[in-house]
Length: 153
Image 1 (cartoon, rainbow, N blue to C red):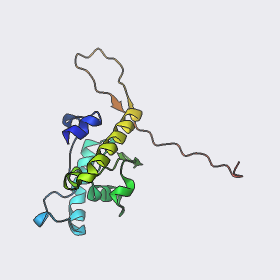
Image 2 (image 1 turned 90 degrees about the horizontal axis):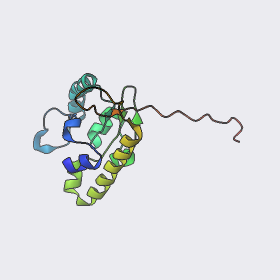
Image 3 (image 1 turned 135 degrees about the vertical axis):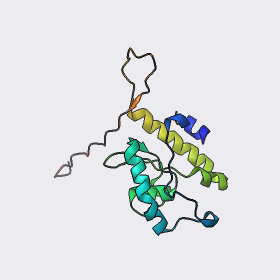
Protein backbone atom coordinates (compact mmCIF):
# COMPACT_ATOMS: atom_id res chain seq x y z
CA UNK A 1 0.00 0.00 0.00
CA UNK A 2 2.83 2.39 0.81
CA UNK A 3 4.31 1.97 -2.69
CA UNK A 4 0.92 2.60 -4.32
CA UNK A 5 0.40 5.72 -2.21
CA UNK A 6 3.89 6.96 -3.09
CA UNK A 7 3.13 6.50 -6.78
CA UNK A 8 0.22 8.94 -6.30
CA UNK A 9 2.43 11.38 -4.41
CA UNK A 10 0.91 10.47 -1.04
CA UNK A 11 2.11 9.01 2.23
CA UNK A 12 0.23 7.30 5.05
CA UNK A 13 0.36 10.38 7.25
CA UNK A 14 -1.65 12.29 4.62
CA UNK A 15 -4.52 9.81 4.48
CA UNK A 16 -7.16 8.38 6.77
CA UNK A 17 -8.25 4.77 6.37
CA UNK A 18 -11.74 3.68 7.39
CA UNK A 19 -13.74 0.56 6.74
CA UNK A 20 -17.40 0.16 5.85
CA UNK A 21 -17.70 -2.88 8.09
CA UNK A 22 -16.41 -2.24 11.58
CA UNK A 23 -15.74 -5.91 12.38
CA UNK A 24 -14.59 -8.79 10.18
CA UNK A 25 -17.41 -11.11 9.02
CA UNK A 26 -16.89 -14.78 9.95
CA UNK A 27 -14.54 -16.72 7.66
CA UNK A 28 -13.68 -13.48 5.86
CA UNK A 29 -16.90 -13.71 3.85
CA UNK A 30 -18.41 -10.74 2.05
CA UNK A 31 -20.55 -8.61 4.36
CA UNK A 32 -24.30 -9.06 4.19
CA UNK A 33 -26.52 -6.11 3.35
CA UNK A 34 -27.84 -5.75 6.91
CA UNK A 35 -24.25 -5.63 8.20
CA UNK A 36 -23.40 -2.87 5.74
CA UNK A 37 -26.54 -0.92 6.72
CA UNK A 38 -25.74 -1.35 10.42
CA UNK A 39 -22.19 -0.02 10.02
CA UNK A 40 -22.84 2.64 7.38
CA UNK A 41 -23.90 5.40 9.84
CA UNK A 42 -20.57 5.03 11.65
CA UNK A 43 -18.65 5.40 8.38
CA UNK A 44 -20.68 8.45 7.39
CA UNK A 45 -20.05 9.98 10.81
CA UNK A 46 -16.30 9.44 10.38
CA UNK A 47 -16.45 11.16 7.00
CA UNK A 48 -18.51 14.01 8.46
CA UNK A 49 -15.98 14.55 11.26
CA UNK A 50 -12.92 14.44 9.01
CA UNK A 51 -14.51 16.43 6.17
CA UNK A 52 -12.32 15.10 3.38
CA UNK A 53 -12.44 16.64 -0.07
CA UNK A 54 -11.56 13.30 -1.66
CA UNK A 55 -12.55 9.78 -0.66
CA UNK A 56 -10.85 6.90 -2.43
CA UNK A 57 -13.01 3.85 -2.06
CA UNK A 58 -11.16 0.54 -2.22
CA UNK A 59 -13.20 -2.23 -3.82
CA UNK A 60 -16.85 -3.02 -4.37
CA UNK A 61 -18.24 -2.66 -0.84
CA UNK A 62 -16.90 0.79 -0.10
CA UNK A 63 -17.74 2.03 -3.59
CA UNK A 64 -21.30 0.70 -3.58
CA UNK A 65 -21.89 1.95 -0.05
CA UNK A 66 -20.84 5.53 -0.74
CA UNK A 67 -22.26 5.77 -4.27
CA UNK A 68 -25.46 4.20 -2.91
CA UNK A 69 -25.94 1.98 -5.91
CA UNK A 70 -24.99 -1.51 -6.98
CA UNK A 71 -22.18 -1.05 -9.46
CA UNK A 72 -19.11 -3.13 -10.25
CA UNK A 73 -15.76 -1.64 -9.31
CA UNK A 74 -14.29 -2.44 -12.73
CA UNK A 75 -16.92 -0.21 -14.37
CA UNK A 76 -16.30 2.85 -12.18
CA UNK A 77 -12.68 2.58 -11.04
CA UNK A 78 -10.31 5.54 -11.47
CA UNK A 79 -13.13 8.02 -12.19
CA UNK A 80 -14.21 10.99 -10.12
CA UNK A 81 -17.79 11.09 -8.81
CA UNK A 82 -18.77 14.51 -7.47
CA UNK A 83 -20.95 14.16 -4.41
CA UNK A 84 -22.44 16.98 -2.34
CA UNK A 85 -19.55 17.32 0.13
CA UNK A 86 -16.66 15.39 -1.42
CA UNK A 87 -15.42 13.54 -4.46
CA UNK A 88 -15.38 9.74 -4.60
CA UNK A 89 -12.53 8.16 -6.57
CA UNK A 90 -13.05 4.37 -6.64
CA UNK A 91 -10.04 2.07 -6.84
CA UNK A 92 -9.58 -1.68 -6.91
CA UNK A 93 -8.96 -3.09 -3.45
CA UNK A 94 -5.23 -3.80 -3.02
CA UNK A 95 -6.06 -7.22 -1.52
CA UNK A 96 -7.73 -8.20 -4.80
CA UNK A 97 -4.49 -7.44 -6.65
CA UNK A 98 -2.53 -9.49 -4.13
CA UNK A 99 -4.82 -12.48 -4.63
CA UNK A 100 -5.10 -12.02 -8.39
CA UNK A 101 -1.65 -10.98 -9.57
CA UNK A 102 -2.99 -10.00 -12.99
CA UNK A 103 -4.76 -7.03 -11.35
CA UNK A 104 -1.59 -5.46 -9.96
CA UNK A 105 -0.74 -3.59 -13.18
CA UNK A 106 -4.33 -2.32 -13.37
CA UNK A 107 -4.15 -1.14 -9.77
CA UNK A 108 -0.85 0.65 -10.40
CA UNK A 109 -2.34 2.32 -13.47
CA UNK A 110 -5.36 3.43 -11.42
CA UNK A 111 -3.07 5.01 -8.82
CA UNK A 112 -1.37 6.89 -11.66
CA UNK A 113 -4.80 8.21 -12.64
CA UNK A 114 -5.35 9.21 -9.01
CA UNK A 115 -2.07 11.17 -9.12
CA UNK A 116 -3.17 12.89 -12.34
CA UNK A 117 -6.48 13.80 -10.69
CA UNK A 118 -4.68 15.16 -7.62
CA UNK A 119 -2.20 17.09 -9.78
CA UNK A 120 -5.05 18.71 -11.71
CA UNK A 121 -6.93 19.65 -8.55
CA UNK A 122 -4.19 20.65 -6.12
CA UNK A 123 -3.05 24.21 -5.92
CA UNK A 124 0.10 25.23 -4.11
CA UNK A 125 -0.38 27.18 -0.93
CA UNK A 126 0.69 30.78 -0.78
CA UNK A 127 4.09 31.30 0.81
CA UNK A 128 3.65 32.16 4.45
CA UNK A 129 5.78 33.46 7.23
CA UNK A 130 4.99 30.40 9.33
CA UNK A 131 7.99 28.38 10.46
CA UNK A 132 6.51 25.04 9.43
CA UNK A 133 5.75 24.26 5.79
CA UNK A 134 2.12 24.14 4.75
CA UNK A 135 0.83 21.32 2.56
CA UNK A 136 -0.72 22.15 -0.82
CA UNK A 137 -4.49 22.52 -0.81
CA UNK A 138 -6.74 20.19 -2.70
CA UNK A 139 -9.20 22.39 -4.58
CA UNK A 140 -11.88 20.30 -6.25
CA UNK A 141 -14.57 22.09 -8.18
CA UNK A 142 -17.25 20.06 -9.93
CA UNK A 143 -17.03 20.21 -13.70
CA UNK A 144 -19.27 22.77 -15.31
CA UNK A 145 -21.88 21.12 -17.52
CA UNK A 146 -21.60 22.11 -21.15
CA UNK A 147 -24.45 24.16 -22.53
CA UNK A 148 -26.33 22.11 -25.09
CA UNK A 149 -27.16 23.72 -28.40
CA UNK A 150 -30.87 23.51 -29.11
CA UNK A 151 -30.35 23.05 -32.83
CA UNK A 152 -27.29 20.75 -32.72
CA UNK A 153 -24.86 23.13 -34.41
